[in-house]
Image (cartoon, rainbow, N blue to C red; front, side):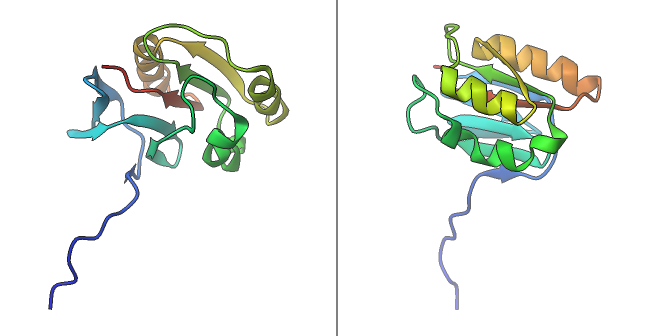
Length: 129
């Protein structure tokens, strides 16, 4: 007997370049995802920060669990560049992670270059329309 639809957390178990972004989502590894992404060494995860306009350290718990494998965090802030909140910058610094906020488009392009160079990079990408 069929169990019905099983809804699982969005996760791609590997590293892959981001092929496209826009229309509220991203395309990577010949798949698409609607919504924001947290791209880590362990894979690409669907990400829903509580408030994309006011990121908090708690939005990055999964990143902090992998902090030893990440040197650089690219934060795609949406269409416009905004600074990271001071408390989040302090938490990232304490974890040994250098964070660079930028527009989501710039973060995607930079992530792809650093991934191709096999760097210890992660990205938090807020979806844009």
